[in-house]
Length: 352
Image 1 (tube, rainbow, N blue to C red):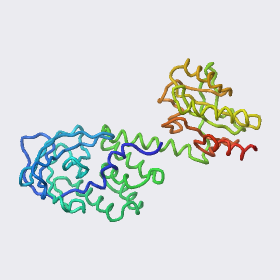
Image 2: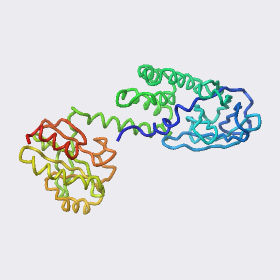
Image 3: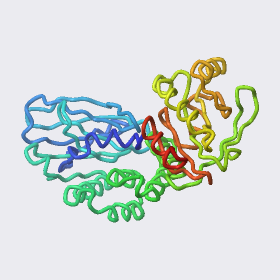
């Protein structure tokens, strides 16, 4: 249940992305949108070229052409957004050229397919793409060994998309503030772009995860039981508490329930409680699962919102079962303990 999503689309291709050089060959004056022209030296005749717009977790192909015998190509596209991260995909594989453009851009790209992987290229018609080239060069030479470089880059660049790209080379768990700053720039410059929305969702998820890291006080939960009575997590303070996110429709959760029941029976009198949070939508199915699985503890709550569950969002839960073990002061001391690992920890805390 880690990272950031939208980041995955680019990470699949980012190290194969090395762009190209260019020539001003004159754009199609009649086209109202993005124009990409260039020459690919060493390409086989009729090699297909694809113009792609990156839209968060998906990509959209705007145009496809075959190169001429001399390697020349022209692609035309209308971006769905005011500005986007784009790919020039060469052939059907993972050889790509990343660039930044808008619907007024006339981008020229030339490359030699034999040296493309080494980053030998030039690009004109898009100043941000030249800066992106420099960033990718830094990645080639330094890799992820210089997180301070990338954090400073995010802090100082005026381009939100360049800040986004720099985030691909650091870890959100270690550099959350840098991701947050990149998200702020995206929101200011491209508020309606799907990439912005997906990136910020990832940042929010990471923020939730930070709030429930080991050693942090467990955020309060206070929702209704099946009988309609609100039960606050804080009411169990003074006990060792297992917060258990589950649902009647979750097979792995139901499979784990006998282990949780056994732990409750063994350690309840020693000061162990369970606070179950259901991601069900159907109250009857929730109640039926509680009865069938013999979940005999009294603290069962749900807002019956499924994956829109407020407690799940608060705790950054993206998959279930998910558990958080709290000490008697209400601090998180372990996450996702199951089977023997849960038994061992409870024995350590409460005695065998």
